[in-house]
Length: 212
Image 1 (cartoon, rainbow, N blue to C red):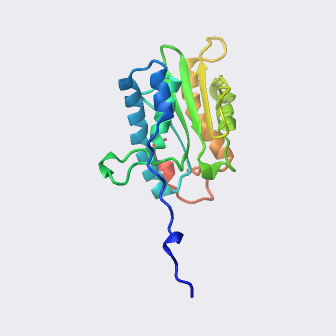
Image 2 (cartoon, helix red, strand yellow):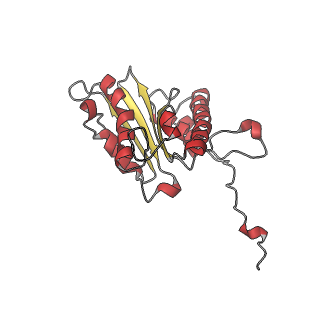
């Protein structure tokens, strides 16, 4: 029989060393301190998501971020932080780790009546999920009065952005805020990508008890 060689070993992902979204946020005029806070929150949340995926098998995730203040540049930096591949030689700096999980994250600014959203689709999910379609589904939802907005022109199939703004006539901030997360999860449920307590034939799912 053939003896396996070292070439059959799975190649580990290289640690992330460049951060274009973080750099773009600072280049837009945001302070390094503010950007670092959003990026750090993303890194911490990413590790939590990785842990949930390991125990429950979830492949998609939706959540609100607290440090981005409805700013799309900060929210993109937060998503980048979620997807960081850490250096295995520095376990104390473990962060991110959730690049294999597709995500839609949300940040609100009540004073501006604005809601920023970023959708990311992992490589292994590209045949099942499209970031632009996911974002459109949230923007165009009829749930609770809707959300509004549309994917930005530079959105792609794997990375889509949007900032929905209250207009006082059609879309009201507090309703928009309530509707975004539900619409994002609802789209996943319709595509069979979110197993929860409503999936009666799927059995128990630890992800259903995780805070989305």
